Image (tube, rainbow, N blue to C red; front, side):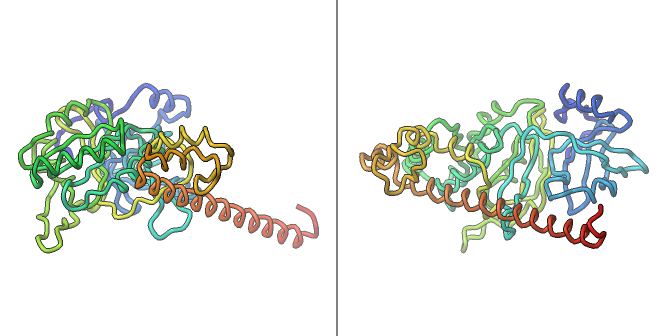
Length: 361
């Protein structure tokens, strides 16, 4: 974690909107801090007084309806200090953004990756797992959160100029206006360019698979060895899992960075805005389709299919768009079914209570 002895709330990202919420909701009696690390049901909260090992008060824990009601790295919270280095969390401040994905192995549930983020730094290695489809998934979760994405194409020292130019051309064609920064953690090429995007008081979140160089990048940005790194296995060409939990750090230039464990799965959640922003070209074409409920699969008068046949849009981009669209629709249906079951169960419980009381509440 950041080893500075003193840091202001403003350096952690505190702003007048948060202060207004504090006053309007009578949270003045509590200290304010930001969650910089999460370990199961315990949290590390940092403010201008130091770092605190914190846990939720019972009422906040038991009133939570889902995992989203618990603190996450990046959250601002109201705390009370009860012992040296110990604190209780009494409330979570409103989140201006939430990066989330489908919870792995849990149908119809979301997992929060980080909150109150301004920009997602999507890191992908140019060699071992270069995959534009996966990048479009990361872009979609950033767009769904309403944050700016920047793609960092790492390990460019492992390929020649011809291969790098081919990768960049492919990315530019598919991802159009997305900012792309070629970078080498070894030669430091691209580091200075990336630093121009990282501004004081803004929060950035590292996203990407294991072994793409996120921890080494963090060390380069912080200009010190903050995170341990592991060498890539020559046989599998895969990096070892180094980052085991999410953690927030303040960089020398004042930028705030959230590091993340590598993600093997990036499941898309509900809501159309993220997909429409990532695939904005297809979203624009969809408005020209003959039928409002066009699935863009086999309908006559489908503007997307016509553009596909004319080779005006990329076939791989279309395939990935349809796959993610189906995944999103399935998630929405699963959530709707879950709510119907919960509502039906609640009605059954109320009817049973009513029956036991002889029809009287």
